[in-house]
Amino acid sequence: MVIGANNGKAERTNGSIQEIKTIGRGYGTAERYRIAILFFYGGLDMSIVNLH
Image (cartoon, one colour):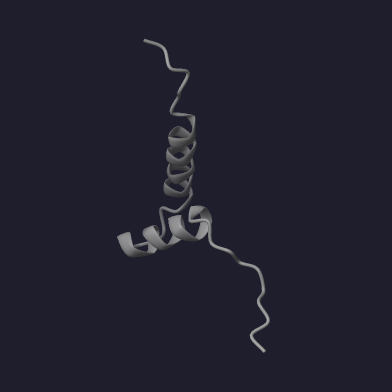
């Protein structure tokens, strides 16, 4: 059965995490590594918001 689906998005995400792992040998702790993954690939909205 062929459904035309693939795992490209998951592979891209895994590749990005591996890139951080390679670059970030100096994060020191698992928590800092987790924060780096969330910062770079967590989809955070970093736009400036006017709170007034």
